[in-house]
Image (cartoon, rainbow, N blue to C red; front, side, top):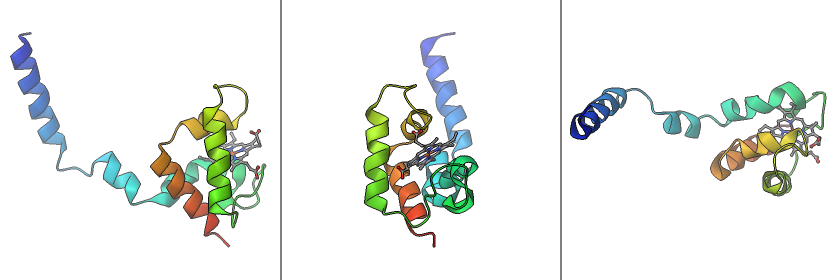
Length: 102
Ligand code: HEC
């Protein structure tokens, strides 16, 4: 396909998708949805899970740990791929969410 035609097609397709809620907006509005990815192991809302409870933990302490995990190469811990799967902003929202659970 001609390059210009392809670009126009891609732009048109993109414009068509815009009226729907974009993933960035959706995520930015829902810290609990992001945190729910951790519930399976750390318990619903960070309570009574198979591993360390996160509910009520200090936000900055949690972020420091998550950032340390992110720096490791994949595979050295269960947590590494999880910590690496989110942006800094998303991890901030997740840590904020858990720190506010009683
Ligand atoms: C598949 C299970 C699993 C999932 C999902 C998971 N974790 Fe973990 N997490 C662990 C395990 C196991 C540990 C114990 C340390 C280790 O093995 O790395 C841990 C440790 C931690 C610690 C350190 C706890 C402490 O007090 O030292 C934090 C913080 C943490 N996880 C946050 C999260 C967050 C935030 C998410 C979601 C983005 C998440 N975890 C998802 C299994 C999981």
